[in-house]
Image (cartoon, rainbow, N blue to C red; front, side):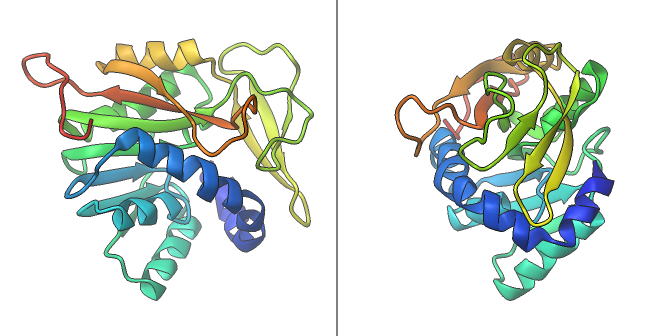
Length: 242
């Protein structure tokens, strides 16, 4: 995953031109709506890329925001943007598969990153990385690929999914982004049930799907917002970011 994003970093502006409007009008508002108030919260953003979600969370009032990504080139882009608009966001290079404990965060976000898991065990390791970096009662918000999307059709953000109609969990396929030249991403198919099961196996509770905002009626979103919580020591799940 880091290699393909190192390559994307070289023409990031072109990719951002295509996907940016959908991200700004649908994905970020949907994530923030699902989170509610984040004033004073600490946030870890997994697979932060160039940092659009970290910046949005910081502007929304999060007190401490750390973005991590396996691609050193993408982290460098994020840091350059931070130098231009100093919000106080930190960035570090880390592979989220087997991520060490970086803190006890109130919130962990993972936007369109879990679909890079090439096996159920890899998906579990990614989710476990989120779990061990959450404080008790902390919350995970992930945007995951919508398994209901039709293949070979341009999606609202311009993506085209190059895959057969029927896939099993973990099967690989590619996403085409209409840049010049075209950009291709290698990802994997995961059903909603697979995400739910893996999160529960990792110890998460309150696993649920949040509504998407900013889309016309009857339009399938490109990604879905998945919410889960790390329970407290007593097994309770009530948290301050509800």
